[in-house]
Length: 186
Ligand SMILES: Cc1cc2nc3c(=O)[nH]c(=O)nc-3n(C[C@H](O)[C@H](O)[C@H](O)COP(=O)(O)O)c2cc1C
Image 1 (cartoon, rainbow, N blue to C red):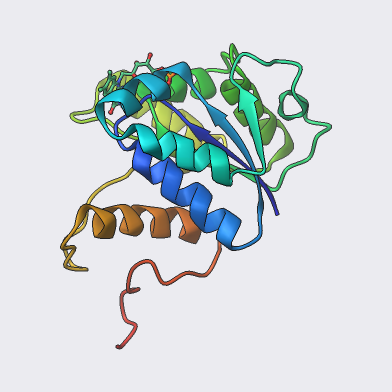
Image 2 (tube, rainbow, N blue to C red):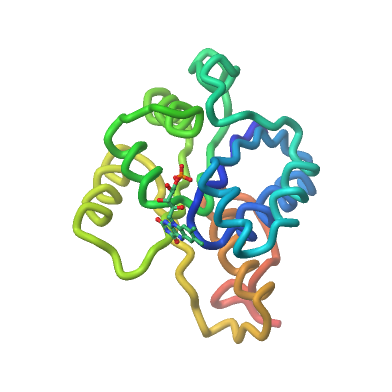
């Protein structure tokens, strides 16, 4: 499948990196866009995450490149994931403010009914953020916030991250064993 992945300036850059790795492992074509905000957050988290994601992706785009294939809905993709998604980018997508390749590519997904998975991260959440999530859900996107769970007994940051990435793969209807599904024995 042809999948666009956008990594934006919310905490959890590692989620975007692990997602790209898992998609590439499954032989999907990954079209990656990294926002300036993501590069800023990565300076505080782990700079190597973005380097690894860039290396793994099939194609890398500048978020300012509005002439890139992803800017046009004539360049058909199967799905787009924004992970992690800042509240700023969430607002841009929810309100049709397509001022970057990320918000434009997401707008194309909404226009064309291609699967759009958005992973907004912040806490606590403001009313505008909650309203933007409702808008996007109503428009057909899947809202998959990186919310932590405890029932899978995570021991490391990698366990927590893989749980989120597993939830994104669930939204993309892709099989995985990144976390033990509820009701599965073993
Ligand atoms: C270290 C750091 C962590 C941040 N974490 C978040 C976050 O979790 N959620 C969020 O919405 N914004 C967060 N921000 C603010 C965004 O990065 C900022 O709003 C930025 O303009 C988003 O731009 P983008 O959506 O184009 O990447 C963070 C900023 C920094 C420097």
